[in-house]
Length: 394
Image (cartoon, rainbow, N blue to C red; front, top):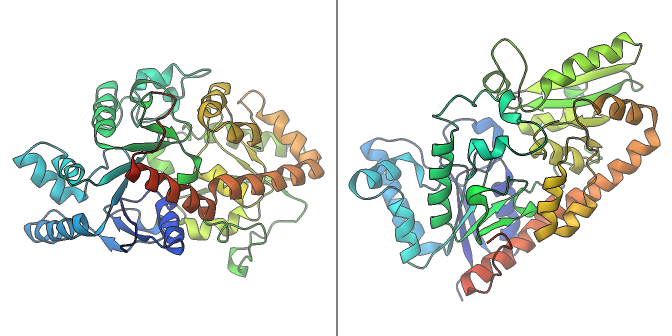
């Protein structure tokens, strides 16, 4: 009997990589194709790479596409505008037929198409996202006035084609508006998974990654990927709230607090975890209303995480995954309250320890790669059988 099979096309940070490895343990043929030539140091693995636009690249990519169409049942894509087998095939098809017809051909062959969203611009207009209470985070974003990256027209056009092509769209914390309100768009925390063994509270730290700070120093971890391109010119104002944390830590130091901000940018993730493991607390976005990979990594390491959690986000989660909302251990804060929140955690180590313990349990349950594989094994099978229940957002 033929094994069930899934091909992950495009990196979803490291999430799809670890999901594919765990699916193999459950008997799946599960492979990942990288179609992004940049940021390879931030990815954790690939089985094949499809990049380039030359005629030779196109011939090679088409041959792989034809073979993949025979070998795989499920095709799982990721990232806005990323429903493609690399640029060469996409451009070739768009020029001769309709854009994305290569994906439509897969659907005509009976293949299941799955997609993982990434970021606030995935299926939601900028206008809708700006209206999400309580603060227009777009005002802190360098891409607010970059229609080539984010605009109402661009975001909505992508959401329309995404929902047409994908049988299942997975998101977590996306604004439920525009094309994110559809029967095929599901809240799915498990797809944003990480290896619970790689990020472990008892992680052994190599000596060359030791920070050299006193054990008593309260260490606040904060990071921004591609910080220079994601921050407003001449400042550190960005959607990650760096512009709040930098002066706040300086203020705490001026008051005599033994505290340090562990601030990193553009460090490969496999190395970053050694610095993360030495922190007392993680701090993340204070206005967006939800969290991303940094917070999940912190929780998996058993650290308290501070981030603004919008009541609207929790209400969204309750409609489809109520336990996730009830068990979420993230400490919510805004720019106005984060100072008091951090001082409270600083002064109560027993509270930090308890939140850290719950954070690890939560992360293993909802974002651990082993549990993610079990959940996705069921989802893929139900999609193939046509028995999966539609999203309550339809």
